[in-house]
Image 1 (cartoon, rainbow, N blue to C red):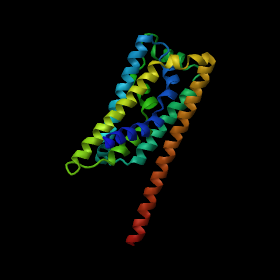
Image 2 (cartoon, rainbow, N blue to C red):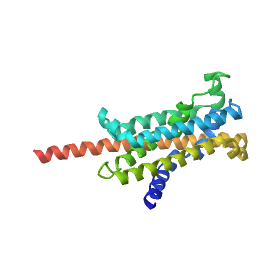
Image 3 (cartoon, helix red, strand yellow):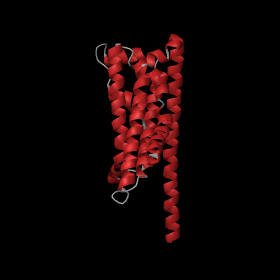
Image 4 (cartoon, one colour):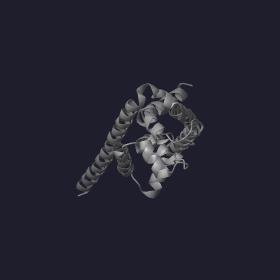
Length: 226
């Protein structure tokens, strides 16, 4: 039981600060401003479900996919950091995100639940990298079949908790920021976008640092061989 609880807490505590659904709620509300309350609730549910399966796939098979294609984790961080930085910069530059989205998508065309609401707004390269890292340290079956089952069960429970937090934060985003008013909401949106930009730069920096570490290790190995 303690192992399961530890797995749940490890997954939830590792992903929650990076996903930060409460901080993303103002941006979600602005991007879905043209939607009705029912449509926004449905959209929040779709984002939560998509986030759950994206994180679950990253945790269970992410490391194998990267290995199959010969992609290193630093490469994922660099590419993902560029995506997040670009998206955050667009949010900062937009005068009124909700109006921009209405003009871009049309008044009757709903914004897509996967991009940009699920990725990169909710589940970005940072959270994907964490999920892949957590999955890469799992015990290998069948030698550790029991521990593997415990980890998977705990991880799924942790991801369910994350998805539920995302749904509640986005579903009640309007109530969460209602006390701020229109001007306060605009400030919160830009602040969240700036934080997202900083996260993107940080992810990009970690990716570049990873490449430097790989280069140093390769140079050290070549010198040792010589």
